Amino acid sequence: ALRHLSQAANGQMAGKPRIDFQTYMQRRYFKQIVSAANQRLIGMSGGQFLLECRNLENLGRQGEVGLDLDVYSMVNDRVRDVRTLSGGESFMAALALALGMADVIACQAGKIHVDTLFIDEGFGTLDSETLQIVMEALERLRSQGRQVGIISHVQELTERIPAKICLVKTGNGKSKVVVE
Image (cartoon, rainbow, N blue to C red):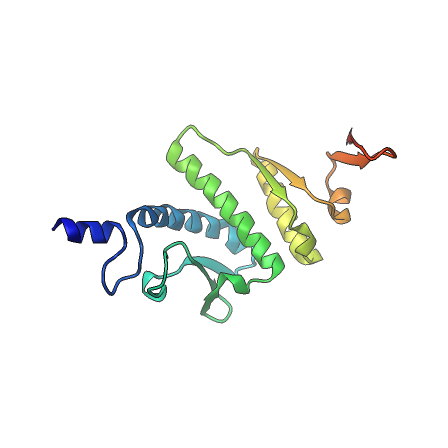
């Protein structure tokens, strides 16, 4: 009985995916994050796709498994690997996952609220239409009382965002901070 329990807890059951107890618990929380992320992603993607945790049956038997993502295309009713997303789609998915994680933390931790979010780059991969969608999503966050900091060199963003902290190179190899 102890050997069987140890094998189950360590993901070593014959004929089953190798998922240990820790990964099993992470997967439970990850599914909640993905669900919260999809509430945001459905709007950002124009109803085109959702994220899904890969079914354990489809994970195979090699290595550790359990936190793999797939994309469900609502347009053609097919599931594909998350790595097939375009740069803009991948950016929206990552943003939705970050926001979904903040939502789950706030929901489960009670008094903890993630009110500030920093996004470092990725905007350069967005076409103008996707950039508009992402900016609208960020503006909705701001209107809900959240602060969003964007770290970027994309010129279109610097024109659209009124409050900025800029690093400006000086002639002596140093930089200075300019608040606009």
